[in-house]
Length: 219
Image (tube, rainbow, N blue to C red; front, side, top):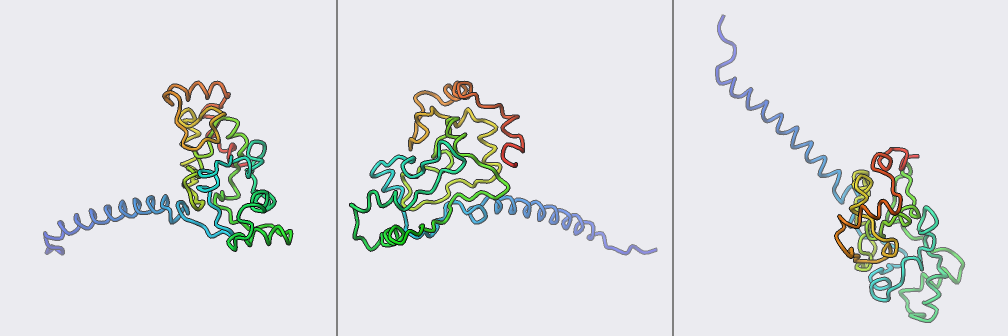
């Protein structure tokens, strides 16, 4: 019986198998890159707000403490969104006639809240508590970035599970003294490798096996 395929078919079959494997690997790599991209995570994207509030001005320029606006960050799961009255405390005296701030004045005048758009919006199946992180020495900028340098607020981190686990597996690399939790641009007094483990012990932070248990974040 004569040979059905020419000898050159062997080379083509090997090349096609190699091309298929390469394509599958390239596709897998592309999916992983896309899944971590800002397009998917919404990181580093400015979001339109009813008033384009500048943390760079209020925190970096004026030096307002995070807790002045986010009053419940130390005691509750939510950091809290400031009521319009908080804005009016200053803006009844400063920029009181600015057209830019008319939505704020209208909100206070009509007793209707400003409809802020949440920037850091975790899925409903994820539980996050601000107060426990503050109590354990996790700085605001660890998750939110240096807001004192943000003219408009944006999500700096991906907020994906692997990003959370990076800290939960190695908390000693991220914790800081409680007195520095609200400090922007924090620099440890000595090596983080030195103070981190000491703070983990002092603040009684659980081990990574407990911190990475599914029930910690998925309840």
